[in-house]
Amino acid sequence: MTGAVLWEPPADVLETSRMGQFMTWLRVERGVEVSDYAGLWEWSVTDLSGFWRAVWDYFEVIAHSEPTATLGSTAMPGAQWFPGATLNYAEHVLRMPGLADDDPVVLAYSQSREPVTLTARELRDQVRRVAAGLRRLGVAEGDRVAAYAPNIPETFVLLLATASLGAIFSSCAPEFGSRSVIDRWTQIEPRVLVAVDGYRYGDKAIDRRDEVAAIRAALPSVEHLITIPYLGTVGDWASLDGDDPLTFAAVPFDHPLYVLYSSGTTGLPKPIVHGHGGILLEHLKMLALHHDLGPGDRFLWFTTTGWMMWNFLVSAPAVGSAIVLFDGNPGHPDLGALWQLAADAEVTYFGTSAPFILACRKAGVQPPPTVIRGVGSTGAPLPPEGFRWIYEVLGDRPQLQSLSGGTDVCTGFVGGTPLLPVTEGVISCRALGSRVEAYDPEGKPVLGVLGELVITAPMPSMPVGFWNDPDGQRYFEAYFDVFPGVWRHGDWITIGADGSCVITGRSDATLNRGGVRLGTAEFYSVVEGIGEIADSVVVHLDEQDELLLFVVLADGLELDDDLRKRIQRELRAALSPRHVPDEIHQVRAVPRTLSAKKLEVPVKRILTGTPADRAAAKGALANPESLTAFEEYAKGRNA
Image 1 (cartoon, rainbow, N blue to C red):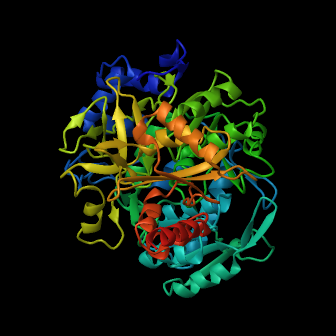
Image 2 (cartoon, rainbow, N blue to C red; image 1 turned 135 degrees about the vertical axis):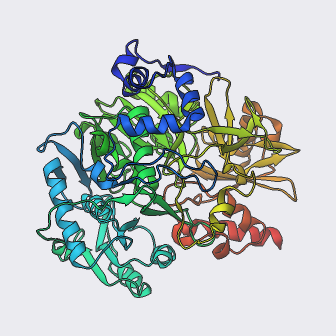
């Protein structure tokens, strides 16, 4: 696809990158002759069994029982990966290849307490002790352990200890309201609840003891509540202890590892069950081959425990990388704080969200000198100006990888590779083993034009299923009821002839005017490029064929006719007359999920008469009060 090239792979990339070394191994060990990324991707999605068995062997997966095959059934849903194999995810994370016992593997920074560093030996010992403590509480294979806790070492240790026993982990960030947490955990009925007493967000102390009490009261399945004294000094986390040796339950490849949840902005959140083997293989592939992480790297992704990027981040020790955890307000005391932390912690790969990058650009942030060599962006499409800003402030060394995937697969299925250049506004490639295509409305693959993002071959990290969905009906309806046997993800994507991709927003938030489908991402890029505009949300009301734009202005500014006309001019010039809104209104805030995604669909539902409490689950929003303005506008409009 066209656009300025901002970064090129070094001449020796095939020798120095882990993906290049994997290609050499394939040639020597498997006789697979591919010379570039396009050839490697094509082989990986054509010979699924060959590719995923190569990943298994290359990363020396520890099998307690060997698989009888690589891929039994290729049906979707229902693909059978590595039948007969038993293994344990936690065993691989704690193997930490390339790290010595005294090497730091967890570096945790927080606005609630002083920094914490764990060496490889200390991490293994803490997991051993917490696993012994859970075992003493009666936790056994298949039991659920829930964490109402932030991105801190204790949450990571609890995940690994739970997984080591073959029990099932689930986390919610403590900024989730009690109703949202209860909606999630009543579905899975945890036996043990581990919770913080509160946390600090910037300079504000937030007590969560009442929320913890409400959650406990609503979950009769909980036999034990363990408190981490994170805000105060009283808690019994240290009671999770014991002298048992560290062991790992040998569980089947698809044994549940953890339950993640859809954003839950409408209805009950979908409880998405991920398996030990699928997550392990997918994360080994993505972290080592695509992100080029290994021993000597320090990997930071700004996330909370309520976003799948946390689950992705904490797999990095499995490829030998140390992880950097951060809990707090990334904008305190200003938006440069996270960049300063990255410099102080000697982060080599810095992951964040597109909205954060754009906010830093708008605020004129100047990051300090760092050793960052990779930058990851996800959560929303990153427009060209976001790409350009990274290279303006960090120089030409880092590779910027814009990626997209989801909670549903707990990974990115389009992203970057060390083997391809970075072009502004463009996702470089489809990930290895991910047969991503664009479909037209008739279900035919298309290139170079906008289509529905679909996955036409199984991936190991597709969900084992949904919790308490014995006949698989909810799972089927979520992904497979539009194109039989094909995963429909719900995004618009354009795939170039070279395999590069541009995602232009959710297909359920499409702006469809005069029969022309418009993605929202390019719209926001223009609108939020105007200096006075801090944020925006656009919706198309189909029956009336009206395009409505709501803008959040910089502090102290009011929307007037001059600014309205300028917005209209910019959209007409940069995009087309079809992009010019029928109405533009000012609001105080745009509704966003706790992982910062804009909520076009709930806004659209409110504007068409759905009460706000039915249009969106307010506990899943970062700013539920933002819905009020749209309710008031809808009432006035309907009156």
